[in-house]
Image (cartoon, rainbow, N blue to C red; front, side, top):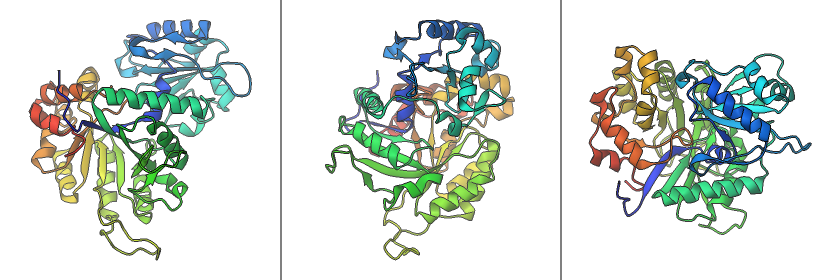
Length: 407
């Protein structure tokens, strides 16, 4: 058992609203095949009521605010780990859900499969596998705000119980409204300090708020329920890395450092090009807005994940002074997928860690919850005992240091 340090751990990349949503979802992580997944979903659709979930999660469905019909929210499958190595089809979901609108969320949150009833309600005319379509999924009926605040409060309380005293919400759809909701939840759990990124395309929603400032809870008491405004989150559009430079430029115009989602070599290349083309303004520098200057203390830009990287790309990261926030648990939890889909040479470039530290790059370990549990002991074990790319292992003391709330 890992001893909790006096100041606690930091989970520097998670998604609090997604963690809350998981608590009202049908959990299919245990399904090893499409057939097993459909059995679980079918049972939930037939009962269409709350159930007891493993690991204290609850199966339930959010009510449609327009009528009494319930939507079914399902979460936790990974097509690469199912026996069939594919997504369930809309027809297969229809066979077990019938007219119950159902959204099946991938473990990562980046993909969703909808049945015909849900697709019809969302206005889809073709295609039921949605990749990065939060614009469409935003129309799915959700729990009301008070219920969501309560669920996020539970998530934060669980983080505190695990020894995590600071966390960073890295959700790219965050705006001021989301930060205000998180602040209301944080008011009930003052032992956990919350920083929340804001989508680079949503910075205008902040009004006069700057990077590093705080959003207070509706109680309005400084220090009670305050969420710190974090980096501008850049989520490259699906199959379009060319947008990265524009989003970085937007963040710079708002005096924000950026945190860029990077899962492959091509996206990393586009990211490094964008960061070189749009460097951060020096601290204390006056801006075109006479009322503002760049903050005296500028935090480095961040690369989120850095799942696959060439050695020469790591050299560029070091030269640019960019930090990397990574998730070592992915190496162990997705080992089967990587062995099947990557060549031995590519496997050697997976989830660099020791290579980052040797170059003097600032590194923080994290979970990406709910994809991986917010459990520092697991991150440390994965960082020290990984089978894939074993040259990237680090010692337990170093791994623990990379998880600390204060470094």
